[in-house]
Length: 216
Length: 304
Image (cartoon, rainbow over all chains, first blue to last red; front, side, top):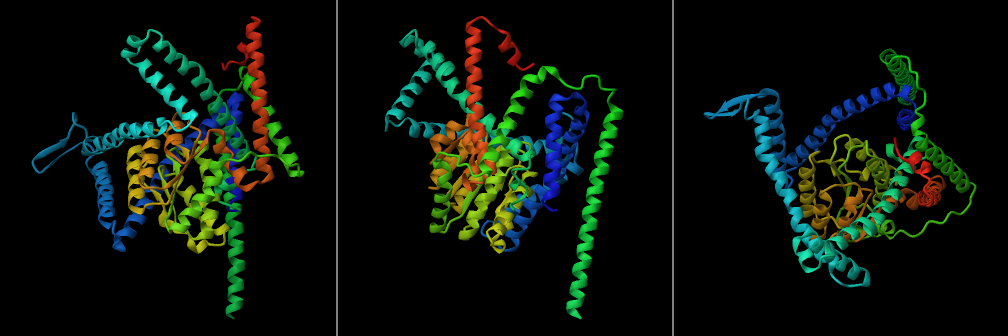
C-alpha cells in the first residue's frame, strides 16, 4: 500500500489535469488541486531545511574537515530566519539603522547586498566558460567541427557592424542560417522532446511507469 | 512466552496497518468528495461540457494513447522491437565502472526544476536505475537537489534503488543533499562538491538552465567523465560541447526503456517513433494544402 496509494493519487490527479484542458466543468476541481500543489511545495521547504540541518549538524558533530563551512551555513540559516521573523521592517544595530521603509527590512538588505552580488558573480563566470567551451567546440578536428566552426564565424560576424562592412550579404546569410537550418533542427529536437514528454506523462498516468515513488 | 508476545505484536501491527490504510483511503475519499462539492458550489451550472476548439489537440492525444497501448500489447506478446544504440546511456555503466575503479563517488544532478516538471520526475526514475547499479559496486552516489520538494523523491529513489540491489545498508542518507532553491547558490554548492569530493563521474539528467555550462565546465576541470541529458533545447549545445556524452531531447526520455528493456516501456518508444511519422505526414499534408491555397487545414490545426 505504501506504493499503491501514491500511484493511485498520481493517476487520478493526472487524469483530472488532462480532462481540465478539454472539459471546462473539471477546471474548478483542477484549480483546487493546483492550490494543493502550492501548499505542498510550501510545506516541503521545511523538509529542505531539515535535510540541510541534519547533514550539516552531522558534519559539525563528526568534526568533518568541512565543519567550519557547515557552521557558517547553519548560522546563516538561523540568522536569516531570525531577521525575517523578528525584524520585519527596520532595526538599529550598533548605531546604524538597518532597513526602514526605503531600504527594506534587514532580511531584504542582507539578501540584496550580500546574496545578489554573490549570485551575480557566479552568473558572470558563464562568460569565461562560454569562451573555453567555444574554443573546444570550434577546434577543427573533423569535417563536422569544420562546418560548425565556419558557421559560428559567419553567425558572429553577421551579428556585428563589421560584418556588413566586409560584405553586404553577411547579416542576411547569418539570419538565414539562424532562421532556416538552425530553426529546422531546433524544431525537430523540440517535437521529439515534446513527444517524449507526452509519452512519459502517459506512462505515469496509465500506471506503466511506477519507479518515481521508489523501485519495485 | 517471548515468541507468543512477538506473534501478538505482529498481528496487532498488521491490524493497525490495515486500519491506518483504511483511514487514509477514507480520508482521501472524503477530501475528494468535499473538493468536488466545493467546486460545484463555487462554479455556476456548466453549460459547455467540451471545448470544441481543442478537438485538434484531443484527436492527436487520443491517437497517440491508442498507438502507445497497441505497441505495449505487441511488446508484451513477445514481438521484438528494435532500439538503436545510445552511447550516452551505455556510458552510464562505463561511468559507474570508472568511479568504482578509482574509488571515487558519482555525482548525479537531477536538474534544478520542481517536481511539477516531467523532466524532474523522469530524472527520479533514472536515478532509481542508477542507484540500483551503483549499490552493487558499493560506490558512493551523491545527489545534490535544488528544490526542497524533490528532496524526499530523490531520497526515496536512491533508498529503494539500494534496497532493490540487496544493499539497503549501503545507503547513506547524507549523500542526498538539498542545497538551495536559488539557481546560482545551488550551482556554487555543486561546484564546491565537485572541487572538494572530486567525483569520478558527473551525471546531469533533468531540467537545466543557465547553470548547465558552469556545472559542466567545472566538471571538466575536475577531470570527471560527464554524461548529460535534457529536453531544454537552449541548454543542449552547452552540454554537447562540455560533456563526454549528451542525450539529446527525446533520448533523455528513452532512458528507462533502454536500460530496463521492459516491454511496457519499450512499446512506448516504438509508439513515439510511429507518432513522429504521423506528425511528419501531417506537416507534409499541411505544406501541400497551403501550396494549393487550401487554408482550412492549417486554420483548424492552429491552437486557439
